[in-house]
Length: 366
Image (cartoon, rainbow, N blue to C red; front, side, top):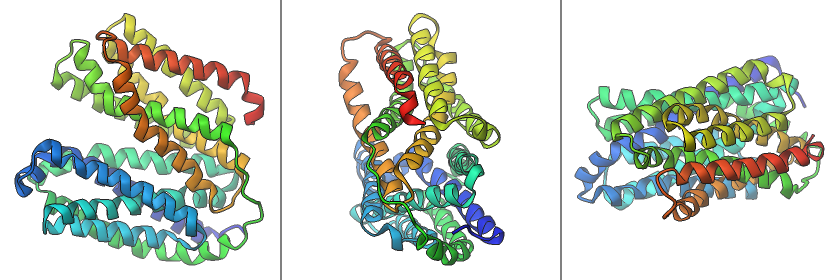
């Protein structure tokens, strides 16, 4: 069942605005940790548990979608996000704020698993481009929100209060898409098809992205750059990330999705190995281009192989979460004793190996 144009527009508008707020909400946590530390009398390291709580909530949202995904609608995701953000803004206690972050993250998981497949299906041939647009807006929110946070006086209560209000407003915009989406969900015709091979590629793609974002700045500092320079290069990384996502809106339909994945992994190998031999800063910024292509390439390929069953999107997102959660820990242990460029050696060699395997198996992915 194809949505009418008015419902397509409502779905896309709600999705774009939701992903902007998702990116904004996640990125505020980093600069807000010192304020949370002061407000609740915990160390900055302990305050970092709020970020873990966000990801735990995202995993909870994915599980919810696996269990009752057919019943979940965009408005449900927005309601959960609004409730979580409002509770964070209330600041009623440390453990209450941790729980609120789990709730907020649960809305994240639901939103990602609702909007991505709905937009992909609603726009048919233009679906991959629209999925790229959604995820580009996530990056836009992540870039702008920390600047707005500082401009607003670095107050978590204000920042998350604004996020809660925005979620409530988008909730209203999502209602038409939710009503029509409930009817469209009944039109599922394909059974669930489990495809471990493409899910494995998704794990490696999101794992690489997570390591670049989470451990990249530390790797740059180990390579001799200052903390300030590493932070600036991370901003440049996200600009590259956003630019490639925007470019995919216009060109994604010209390529097979798995070709984009191969290009991203191969370019990662090239840039990471170049960072071993040459000054790493410029190549780290260029790695943002690869990071921006992993999810669209793997997600669209997986949905084409696995069908339109409600459990498909949560399965893909769960695979990505496995990579995103486990890989920074494993890579952090792997680079111990490898010298100041060990991070780039591991990223480059693993990316090269995955590229070779992906090329050999390309015909099975189309």
